[in-house]
Amino acid sequence: MTRRYILMLASLGIAVIAATPVLSCTTVCLLEKEKAVVAYNYDFHPPEGLVLVNKRDTKKMSALRRQGATWTARYGSVTFNQFGRDNPMTGINEKGLMVSQMWLDETRYPPADSRPAIGILEWIQYNLDRHASVAEVLADAEGVRPMSRVTIHYLVADATGDSAAIEFLDGKLVVHRGAAMPVRALANSTYADSVAAFERARSKGEVPTSVSSLDRFVRAAMLAGQANADPIARGFEILASVAQPYFTRWSVVYDLSAREVYFRTEGNRAIRRVALAGLDFSCGTPVKMLDVTAGGAGDVSAAFVDYSEAANRALIESAFTKTPFLREVPAAARDAMSANPGTTSSCAAAS
Image (cartoon, rainbow, N blue to C red):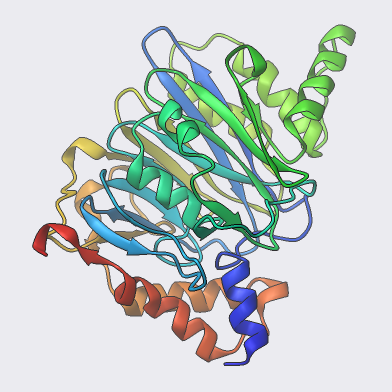
């Protein structure tokens, strides 16, 4: 493996997202009196992915070997992964904390310093592993330093209805929460620009129709305020309205209050459900996985099977082969990515 590819894979946090905003994502929060629901579209090249059941009490080490962060998972989680285990696109933990990511051109991560470094998707797993609430995420937000050439920002939400947009602009952490987050959504423009676009559209009484980042944000925010007796159904309706033809692969709706996940995919429009209460998050049992593109409908909790490095490797192969800017990454680099969780994760409860 050449130094060029080693650095690329490490600094990208095991790269995942397209280099153009059109291949991006949208998240919106639907906060009911007794339900905190979050809806998320994942838009990218490949449709493949694994839904993973990640175990609590697992010791982990970042794939970034220089100043790489180490931690132990306090909580189990369910994540949607396309570029391998421990690098989720989105997920929820057993306390009802949800994290999602979206492309943002304006992102500039902090410069190198003495803090432990972490990949930008590992950052999602790190927070799901360690934190029970948005408040805890923010209290620890500057404890590790995200490192990547891929530019994203995050939306976090929890079972109490708290939420925050987390961005890194000009090398500094920028958080919008509470009164500073009047619209609980995020797409692929800075939060400040997105809210300004929302206010302009609302003042004109217009509902934009394009798939641009700002229009998706505005449309999702406007639709989130409309009544529907079933917030899960409304979540999927909103995701359908902001879907990008040919690139929306997964639509995920989280019921944070009930700790349940609902999802459908481009190839299987049936809604599937996973209840975290029925999953085994103990470290002494195998990590579980589910092919996100598989058939089925309704409760698919019993369809999970034991995780294998072979399945992880096959997913990485498919994702890299179908992503234009990653096709040239050599097999040795893909092998190393696939093997990394097995060499850096261990059960703390057994030690």
